[in-house]
Length: 286
Image (tube, rainbow, N blue to C red; front, side, top):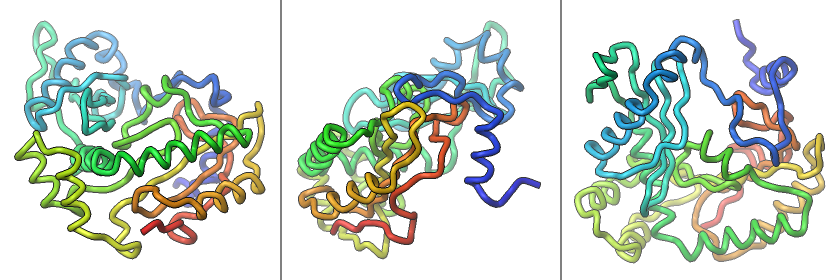
């Protein structure tokens, strides 16, 4: 039986797995559970798997995407994709490679996604699209932080290879789901020409409070110095500065400061984080 302590599991795993300084991590070694089960098929049919994933996103959601990575997984090939135009988002789909036909034919029924997963990614992109000016304030704040403190974000290459959390940058991602704003999601999917101004009006009218937690924005930073552990003082100062910041998007924020090392196979920090504790001392901006 596995431990109920995720941090203990992470430490035990990091002691036996490859780790890399965040500046050098570009997604190497990123794997899924029991990925060896489908590794041969992924290696044999990468173009067919990519085409099937693109067709799924186009036919079901009417989005053109680029494929950033194909990762062997227990239930098939995990395909990490990114939208080409606004709303910008990253997500993933599964391509069942057990029933690939002759000449690598992959039927539409062999591609699927977790319920609501792609919809949530699209929703986060719509939120960023509606509040571009506010997100620029957040981006400017983070740029200032990495200039003033010895902290960094993930590399763009690592984000491409591992990122599937909706609207996502090397420093943060937005977490929300379409069921929180069903009218907005349906309105956009029925009218793909909606402007950011129209989306903003709808979000403003929908209204949301900290208690509802409809929008979470997780800021995830790493120590810059090689092998450095998370620095509590730096984390506390970043949090204090952020609490004083005005003009950022409405939402419930978490701020995490990791050490310098990345656990290759999972694309996450090795050490326990400093910063806020989820659902305990989140920072509400409303």
